[in-house]
Image 1: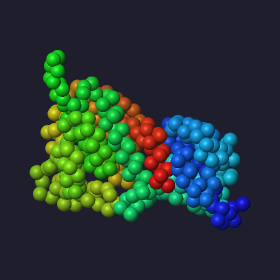
Image 2 (image 1 turned 90 degrees about the vertical axis):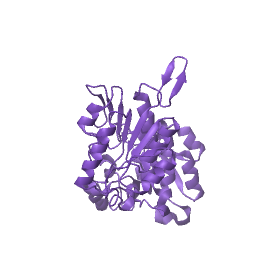
Image 3 (image 1 turned 180 degrees about the horizontal axis):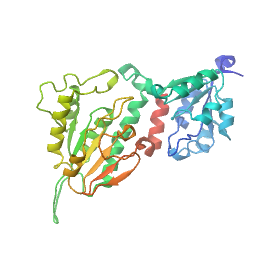
Image 4 (image 1 turned 120 degrees about the horizontal axis):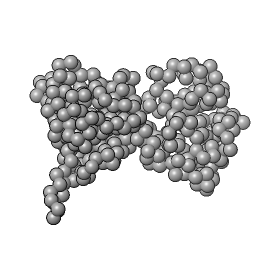
Length: 346
């Protein structure tokens, strides 16, 4: 029976296990499945799909979800397939006429996937194309995942930093607070600002968008201003992202970062514009100027990194003792929280 034939009986919505290496998130949780069933839909999950996010098959069965033994069976039965990652070649072969897949897609860089789906007569709904505007906040999966990434970046920084974030005065001596610089005050950056500040660090943040200064300062951090008349004049762009800065602005920006580098203990970079290489904002000489034991978390590693020395999906330690983390799976490292938010978005 097709989804159209079911009519008032609703659709059969299925979620397979993610095949992308290291991906621990799942697009359907027992809670979200319960909500879908209240709307009259049937829910189907591949066995083991939620295990790494902390959701067992028994949890799904208790929520009234049918558990499919294989991915092939799930794809055959589901009218709508909800995923986190875009379908890979194996999954594309399982697409059928009239079927809908909801996932991150990145259409601008996925021409082959779009053509294959069209040839199969199936529909792809790209969660990363939801407008980042107030009316669409509930479906803004990019922001919910960026929020997690920003929080997790600070946790990862603390894991690699050899001191407290907060300052302390004890009988054994005085411990100064860590100084943290967040480069880019979008969703991820503001999440990092809030987390670092709450842990007691002296937190600085920079962004090219004028509205970011007020947001940063309202969270107890200090905004880094530049001595540049055109600063932030053209920094805001559409869709919630910063625009590309002028060469003159970039020179002033880098000069400011060079001045700050010897004083900063932790740098978290978040600057990224969709379908572009990440701008290089933390150069090799800035890394060399940092103190031994300092940490850089580069959230733009997937697009080349904001730091010159970042290696995607690796952690390196430089000759002068600076740790640079280029992991790209921060939301997946908090799979239970990320899955809960993502399943709510879709």
